[in-house]
Length: 248
Ligand code: SF4
Ligand code: F3S
Ligand code: FES
Image (tube, rainbow, N blue to C red; front, side, top):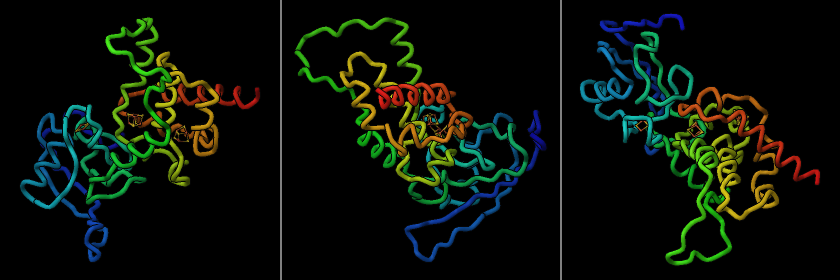
Protein backbone atom coordinates (compact mmCIF):
# COMPACT_ATOMS: atom_id res chain seq x y z
CA UNK A 1 0.00 0.00 0.00
CA UNK A 2 1.48 3.34 -0.96
CA UNK A 3 2.56 5.53 1.94
CA UNK A 4 2.87 2.63 4.38
CA UNK A 5 5.98 2.80 6.54
CA UNK A 6 7.32 -0.62 7.68
CA UNK A 7 9.15 1.03 10.61
CA UNK A 8 6.63 3.74 11.26
CA UNK A 9 8.00 5.01 14.59
CA UNK A 10 8.41 8.77 14.58
CA UNK A 11 5.74 9.60 12.01
CA UNK A 12 3.06 12.15 12.66
CA UNK A 13 -0.28 10.50 12.04
CA UNK A 14 -3.19 12.50 10.68
CA UNK A 15 -6.51 11.10 11.78
CA UNK A 16 -9.73 12.04 10.01
CA UNK A 17 -12.61 10.73 12.08
CA UNK A 18 -16.26 10.83 11.04
CA UNK A 19 -18.30 11.98 14.01
CA UNK A 20 -22.00 12.29 14.67
CA UNK A 21 -24.31 12.11 17.66
CA UNK A 22 -27.72 10.89 16.46
CA UNK A 23 -29.18 11.50 19.94
CA UNK A 24 -28.74 15.23 19.33
CA UNK A 25 -30.84 16.55 16.44
CA UNK A 26 -28.52 19.55 16.10
CA UNK A 27 -25.47 17.33 15.60
CA UNK A 28 -24.55 17.11 11.92
CA UNK A 29 -22.04 14.53 10.66
CA UNK A 30 -18.57 16.05 10.44
CA UNK A 31 -14.95 15.00 9.99
CA UNK A 32 -12.67 15.91 12.90
CA UNK A 33 -8.91 16.06 12.33
CA UNK A 34 -6.35 15.00 14.92
CA UNK A 35 -2.57 14.74 14.84
CA UNK A 36 -0.71 12.16 16.90
CA UNK A 37 2.92 11.13 17.23
CA UNK A 38 3.15 7.48 16.34
CA UNK A 39 4.66 5.11 18.89
CA UNK A 40 6.25 1.77 18.19
CA UNK A 41 3.68 -1.05 18.21
CA UNK A 42 0.78 1.41 18.30
CA UNK A 43 -2.63 -0.03 17.44
CA UNK A 44 -5.70 1.98 16.51
CA UNK A 45 -7.03 1.10 19.96
CA UNK A 46 -4.05 2.85 21.60
CA UNK A 47 -4.21 5.76 19.16
CA UNK A 48 -7.93 6.36 19.74
CA UNK A 49 -7.48 6.23 23.50
CA UNK A 50 -4.67 8.77 23.29
CA UNK A 51 -6.77 11.05 21.09
CA UNK A 52 -9.66 10.78 23.55
CA UNK A 53 -7.40 11.38 26.56
CA UNK A 54 -5.58 14.37 25.13
CA UNK A 55 -7.73 15.98 22.44
CA UNK A 56 -11.34 14.81 22.24
CA UNK A 57 -12.86 13.65 25.55
CA UNK A 58 -16.27 13.10 23.94
CA UNK A 59 -15.01 10.80 21.18
CA UNK A 60 -16.97 7.54 21.37
CA UNK A 61 -15.79 4.11 20.21
CA UNK A 62 -16.12 0.54 21.48
CA UNK A 63 -13.50 -1.83 22.83
CA UNK A 64 -13.74 -4.68 25.31
CA UNK A 65 -11.09 -7.37 24.86
CA UNK A 66 -8.39 -5.56 22.81
CA UNK A 67 -7.45 -8.99 21.49
CA UNK A 68 -9.67 -9.66 18.47
CA UNK A 69 -12.07 -11.80 20.50
CA UNK A 70 -15.14 -9.74 21.45
CA UNK A 71 -15.86 -8.25 18.01
CA UNK A 72 -16.84 -4.85 19.40
CA UNK A 73 -14.20 -2.63 17.76
CA UNK A 74 -15.15 -3.05 14.10
CA UNK A 75 -14.96 0.19 12.11
CA UNK A 76 -14.15 1.44 8.62
CA UNK A 77 -10.39 1.90 8.48
CA UNK A 78 -9.36 3.83 5.38
CA UNK A 79 -12.60 2.65 3.82
CA UNK A 80 -12.33 -1.04 4.71
CA UNK A 81 -14.06 -2.84 7.61
CA UNK A 82 -11.59 -4.09 10.20
CA UNK A 83 -10.89 -4.50 13.90
CA UNK A 84 -9.26 -1.42 15.41
CA UNK A 85 -7.64 -3.36 18.25
CA UNK A 86 -5.83 -5.66 15.80
CA UNK A 87 -4.72 -2.95 13.37
CA UNK A 88 -1.23 -1.55 13.79
CA UNK A 89 -0.84 2.04 12.70
CA UNK A 90 2.43 0.98 11.05
CA UNK A 91 0.37 -1.05 8.56
CA UNK A 92 -1.39 2.13 7.41
CA UNK A 93 -0.39 5.32 5.60
CA UNK A 94 0.15 8.36 7.81
CA UNK A 95 -3.32 9.68 6.96
CA UNK A 96 -5.91 7.44 8.57
CA UNK A 97 -9.64 7.87 8.06
CA UNK A 98 -12.01 6.20 10.52
CA UNK A 99 -15.78 5.88 10.21
CA UNK A 100 -18.47 3.75 11.85
CA UNK A 101 -19.40 0.43 10.22
CA UNK A 102 -22.22 1.06 7.74
CA UNK A 103 -25.39 -1.03 7.96
CA UNK A 104 -25.77 -0.89 11.75
CA UNK A 105 -27.59 1.50 14.06
CA UNK A 106 -25.24 4.35 14.88
CA UNK A 107 -24.83 4.99 18.58
CA UNK A 108 -22.31 7.80 18.30
CA UNK A 109 -19.08 8.55 16.40
CA UNK A 110 -17.39 5.16 15.79
CA UNK A 111 -19.77 3.19 18.01
CA UNK A 112 -22.51 1.12 16.34
CA UNK A 113 -25.05 -1.35 17.69
CA UNK A 114 -23.90 -4.62 16.12
CA UNK A 115 -25.33 -6.55 19.10
CA UNK A 116 -28.90 -5.60 18.23
CA UNK A 117 -28.42 -6.68 14.61
CA UNK A 118 -26.76 -9.96 15.60
CA UNK A 119 -29.54 -10.77 18.08
CA UNK A 120 -32.19 -10.15 15.41
CA UNK A 121 -30.33 -12.34 12.91
CA UNK A 122 -29.85 -15.07 15.49
CA UNK A 123 -33.55 -15.12 16.42
CA UNK A 124 -34.60 -15.10 12.79
CA UNK A 125 -32.30 -17.97 11.83
CA UNK A 126 -32.87 -19.80 15.13
CA UNK A 127 -29.18 -20.28 15.72
CA UNK A 128 -29.37 -22.80 18.48
CA UNK A 129 -29.44 -26.60 18.66
CA UNK A 130 -32.91 -27.94 17.81
CA UNK A 131 -33.54 -31.30 19.41
CA UNK A 132 -37.09 -32.62 19.74
CA UNK A 133 -36.15 -34.82 22.66
CA UNK A 134 -36.19 -33.19 26.05
CA UNK A 135 -32.71 -33.13 27.59
CA UNK A 136 -32.32 -36.09 29.92
CA UNK A 137 -30.81 -35.41 33.29
CA UNK A 138 -27.41 -37.06 33.71
CA UNK A 139 -27.47 -38.36 30.11
CA UNK A 140 -24.19 -38.44 28.20
CA UNK A 141 -23.88 -36.84 24.77
CA UNK A 142 -22.84 -39.14 21.95
CA UNK A 143 -19.16 -38.42 21.32
CA UNK A 144 -18.48 -36.49 18.12
CA UNK A 145 -15.76 -37.43 15.63
CA UNK A 146 -12.78 -35.12 16.20
CA UNK A 147 -12.72 -34.10 12.51
CA UNK A 148 -16.37 -33.02 12.70
CA UNK A 149 -15.82 -31.18 15.97
CA UNK A 150 -12.90 -29.41 14.29
CA UNK A 151 -15.09 -28.37 11.33
CA UNK A 152 -17.74 -26.96 13.67
CA UNK A 153 -15.12 -25.19 15.76
CA UNK A 154 -13.70 -23.59 12.60
CA UNK A 155 -17.08 -21.94 11.90
CA UNK A 156 -17.65 -21.06 15.56
CA UNK A 157 -14.62 -18.77 15.48
CA UNK A 158 -16.94 -16.01 14.21
CA UNK A 159 -16.82 -13.11 16.69
CA UNK A 160 -19.91 -11.36 15.24
CA UNK A 161 -17.93 -8.21 14.57
CA UNK A 162 -20.14 -7.19 11.64
CA UNK A 163 -17.26 -6.56 9.22
CA UNK A 164 -18.72 -9.00 6.66
CA UNK A 165 -22.05 -7.16 6.76
CA UNK A 166 -20.41 -3.75 6.37
CA UNK A 167 -18.35 -5.09 3.45
CA UNK A 168 -21.29 -6.66 1.59
CA UNK A 169 -22.84 -4.72 -1.30
CA UNK A 170 -25.94 -6.93 -1.25
CA UNK A 171 -26.64 -6.05 2.37
CA UNK A 172 -26.28 -2.35 1.60
CA UNK A 173 -29.10 -2.75 -0.95
CA UNK A 174 -31.26 -5.26 0.93
CA UNK A 175 -31.43 -4.77 4.67
CA UNK A 176 -33.13 -8.12 5.38
CA UNK A 177 -30.22 -10.02 3.82
CA UNK A 178 -28.71 -12.38 6.42
CA UNK A 179 -25.18 -11.83 5.16
CA UNK A 180 -22.16 -14.07 5.44
CA UNK A 181 -22.40 -14.20 9.23
CA UNK A 182 -25.95 -15.60 8.99
CA UNK A 183 -25.06 -18.14 6.32
CA UNK A 184 -22.02 -19.18 8.33
CA UNK A 185 -24.28 -19.80 11.33
CA UNK A 186 -26.63 -21.97 9.29
CA UNK A 187 -23.64 -23.90 7.97
CA UNK A 188 -22.46 -24.44 11.54
CA UNK A 189 -25.80 -25.85 12.80
CA UNK A 190 -26.31 -27.89 9.63
CA UNK A 191 -23.07 -29.71 10.43
CA UNK A 192 -23.98 -30.41 14.04
CA UNK A 193 -25.45 -33.92 14.54
CA UNK A 194 -27.12 -32.76 17.77
CA UNK A 195 -29.32 -30.42 15.70
CA UNK A 196 -32.22 -32.47 14.35
CA UNK A 197 -33.25 -29.99 11.66
CA UNK A 198 -32.95 -31.15 8.05
CA UNK A 199 -32.43 -29.26 4.79
CA UNK A 200 -36.18 -28.62 4.48
CA UNK A 201 -35.99 -26.71 7.78
CA UNK A 202 -32.84 -24.81 6.77
CA UNK A 203 -34.37 -24.02 3.38
CA UNK A 204 -37.25 -22.25 5.12
CA UNK A 205 -34.69 -20.04 6.87
CA UNK A 206 -32.24 -19.18 4.08
CA UNK A 207 -33.71 -20.55 0.82
CA UNK A 208 -34.70 -17.17 -0.60
CA UNK A 209 -33.32 -13.83 -1.76
CA UNK A 210 -32.69 -12.70 1.81
CA UNK A 211 -30.55 -15.82 2.23
CA UNK A 212 -28.28 -17.87 -0.03
CA UNK A 213 -30.06 -16.96 -3.28
CA UNK A 214 -29.63 -13.23 -2.64
CA UNK A 215 -25.86 -13.49 -2.27
CA UNK A 216 -24.25 -12.16 -5.45
CA UNK A 217 -20.85 -13.71 -4.64
CA UNK A 218 -19.29 -10.28 -4.22
CA UNK A 219 -16.88 -11.82 -1.66
CA UNK A 220 -16.21 -8.59 0.23
CA UNK A 221 -17.17 -10.63 3.29
CA UNK A 222 -14.43 -13.17 2.64
CA UNK A 223 -11.83 -10.46 2.03
CA UNK A 224 -12.50 -8.48 5.22
CA UNK A 225 -13.34 -11.19 7.80
CA UNK A 226 -10.74 -10.58 10.53
CA UNK A 227 -10.94 -14.23 11.62
CA UNK A 228 -10.29 -15.48 8.06
CA UNK A 229 -13.34 -17.73 8.13
CA UNK A 230 -13.82 -19.82 4.97
CA UNK A 231 -16.86 -17.77 3.96
CA UNK A 232 -16.49 -18.24 0.22
CA UNK A 233 -16.51 -22.04 0.56
CA UNK A 234 -19.26 -22.00 3.16
CA UNK A 235 -21.64 -19.86 1.11
CA UNK A 236 -21.03 -21.87 -2.09
CA UNK A 237 -21.57 -25.16 -0.22
CA UNK A 238 -24.77 -23.98 1.46
CA UNK A 239 -26.11 -22.64 -1.82
CA UNK A 240 -25.51 -26.01 -3.53
CA UNK A 241 -27.28 -27.84 -0.71
CA UNK A 242 -30.27 -25.49 -0.73
CA UNK A 243 -30.51 -25.68 -4.50
CA UNK A 244 -30.41 -29.49 -4.36
CA UNK A 245 -33.25 -29.38 -1.83
CA UNK A 246 -35.30 -27.00 -4.01
CA UNK A 247 -34.87 -29.26 -7.07
CA UNK A 248 -35.93 -32.45 -5.27
FE1 SF4 B 1 -16.90 -10.92 11.70
FE2 SF4 B 1 -16.08 -12.87 10.04
FE3 SF4 B 1 -18.04 -13.33 11.79
FE4 SF4 B 1 -18.48 -11.76 9.72
S1 SF4 B 1 -18.04 -13.96 9.64
S2 SF4 B 1 -19.12 -11.34 11.80
S3 SF4 B 1 -16.51 -10.74 9.48
S4 SF4 B 1 -15.91 -12.83 12.27
FE1 F3S C 1 -22.16 -10.33 0.28
FE2 F3S C 1 -20.29 -12.08 0.73
FE3 F3S C 1 -22.35 -12.73 -0.77
S1 F3S C 1 -20.00 -9.93 0.29
S2 F3S C 1 -22.90 -10.82 -1.74
S3 F3S C 1 -22.40 -12.24 1.40
S4 F3S C 1 -20.25 -13.35 -1.06
FE1 FES D 1 -12.48 -6.97 21.18
FE2 FES D 1 -11.31 -5.50 19.28
S1 FES D 1 -11.73 -4.93 21.33
S2 FES D 1 -12.21 -7.46 19.09
